[in-house]
Length: 271
Length: 297
Image 1 (cartoon, each protein chain N blue to C red):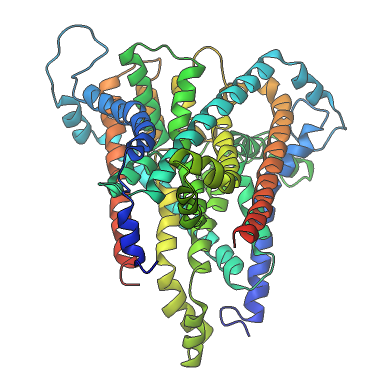
Image 2: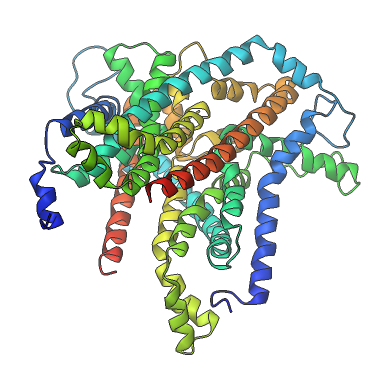
């Protein structure tokens, strides 16, 4: 007997869960439907099937340029965030040092700062030091935002890796760097990959902070935001939305499934 | 090797050269690009730095003006009320979902959890766009009502988009998947023997829930609540897309003070720091609360 749920309670909750899932996915489904609808306006009744909007966005140079800019910003900023995150996580998990509590609080604090506040802080900072706004300034901001996410992904995995493996490496004469490269890093790799993917999607989708520090070359969310103001671009934007949402769903689910598979295998190998 | 583990650990010096090396970059990055920028906002808020050229005296004028202005504070209060409502509703909806996943004994709980969370990991702006398409005067709902004859084409339901309701609906939609996560983690880590003990002592399921499960899952509920409340309090993107004038929030005011129209960086900095202060206090109070809760366990 389940002590937490009666049979009817279980059915009720299952039904409620299904309703919520429908509520969550219905708007996305509606976007998919209207991305193939042969009409300038997303209205009922549907007026025919078309690939027109997909063709149109593939031909839109501004849009492709914005997507490329976001891909570059996301690739670089998540690389930076993961490098800093690995270093910080090792220090937090494996080392003892004074003021550990405040240090970890500082490292995680970008999680709770309102992005509007961080955005204007960066704006005023770049203004004060005379650095003009560009993709570089967006990268700088996104490293700050993504860093705590990478730490939150990396730390639990690092805690699972047995310290005695590293100690064995030291006993065999390896230095700290060598022990990290040959022992810890291979075991940590699945978490490093998922940290990178989380940082990448965070940056790729980030509008609030980027809106304050972006230069003339726009990123994809900035492009999207301005396109939302012109109704004639709407069907095309919906088509892009469908592509981006599908790709990110596939990446997210694929990454999670892959990480579980690899970690299960590593878990079996390391006992 | 009969050395006790604690002593063996002490023998290897943990605080050595590599710890500063490891911490140097992340802390340095945050110091330069996170702490210093906030300090600069502080400097602007007391007019130590300013857009106007020429010498300046440090002054608290903008802070006084802010604390005495009814406009900014009432706008802040309006945002607090909207965020409170959104966070409460979303936590109430997410709790049964997390409860079902964690405690129903379903074998596919991680698959279902991923199904629930996946929308949160897709584009934020595009999910707002979806609601814009759905709620607009010529959007999906209204055109559907007209098409099926339930509504006169000249009288669409116009309060759907560009209203306070639209802002709260979209914010709730955006945060709902994420909020189930901390509650799920708390419920999942509860010791099942506590339920059995309660049942053995004659408690009904409802009593077990009220006196065992709910109090023990309170930290997860608080975390979930704060995870929604903090970001929605400073929200400006969703209100600017679906809020119109009645959905205008405190975050929009901050953005507008730094905008191109009539920039007032001094007042804007005060508003930003006030928000940051409130959020910081909430976070600290909450982590204290969590700390004292976890200590006796």
